[in-house]
Image (cartoon, rainbow over all chains, first blue to last red; front, side):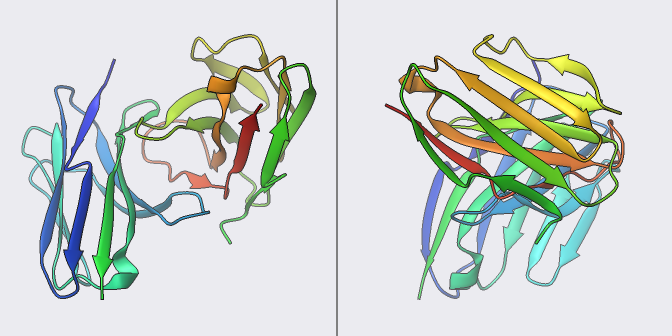
Length: 108
Length: 114
């Protein structure tokens, strides 16, 4: 079983703060994906990281894939209320296995 | 709009009912999936279809029965469900099965079993 542990489970912050959420596993993945899911909608892909140590930036979001391709982090700078949602990581080998997610609330 | 459409969006059913969830993808993809999303639990992969053939069934109870009549449509037939089956059921598709393929999710069908 390729379990992915996401932490923290819940995070509530004020607008303008920075935050980091984590995705950890004991399994190696060929790639790892991050999704954001807003209430009433399905998950939407944010980024795919493939190479160990890779860092990708998407505006205020920075994604990092661990050197051993077992873990990843998502850092958000100057969070905004529009960043509110459930952030899911998914490890990819032949199929995708998801973590339980981090539910982020950004208060104005 | 992700190109994956699910109906109904909300469904309430009794434990003795038979109902079906429908999924349609307009992306020309070859692989389709059913996932179950329950509160505080990871998304659970239920079924995978590749080129209309079921390639994975992750120990899902037989009260859930998938059907893939063609590469654009996927159904989940529901029969004699239990209250613990209440969850968000997500359909998804990708160009092909396997790593390197982006998965596109529908908006989900909220199922409540009473």
